[in-house]
Image (tube, rainbow, N blue to C red; front, side, top):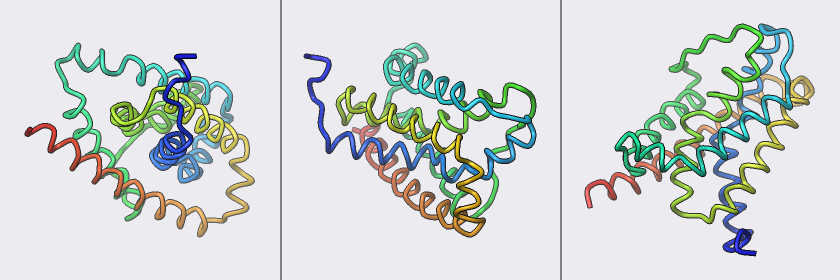
Amino acid sequence: MTFFEGFSWVELFKATTVLFAVIDIVGSVPIIIKLKETAGSLHELRTSSVSFLIMIGFLLVGDSILKLFGVTVESFAVAGSIILFAMAFEMILGVRLFRDEVTGKTASIVPLAFPIIAGAGTMTTLVSLKAEYATINLIAAILINVIIVYAVLKLTEKIEQLLGEGGIAILKKVFGIILLAIAIKLFTTNIQALFE
């Protein structure tokens, strides 16, 4: 019973929403389509499974990994917030700051599972959320988001047809603004902790 201790629908909703905005799988539909064209096909289940394992692994042992390198959660969160800033500006302004090669049969894992889905922004967010929310809520939030990722990967072409280029562009802008707000909160909260 102790595993479920601390479960909260409110925390689950908040964590799920934040992760959904950070992962931005719907906004990544154009990238996924391009990857499918380059790699031929993508393995949706493999991508989702690897993403889930990376996120759960980092949630559970992320602190230990950071301590191994002598990095505090606060400093990692500040560094991650800068990455989130960059990602948000990419989405809002339509500029490209990150350059990734997208070729080969391993496209389902690299770069799709990592770093597009379970990237630095997602990992930073998980470490930051761990300080605020119970682990059970974060595991459930990760699972919900991975299910959404799987569904989007399966329905990529249908989503593109349904939303059209304009719809996808609007979604990217909306999630970009949400992500920017998250980055600002993450930065201000943790930068204060560094100087206390």
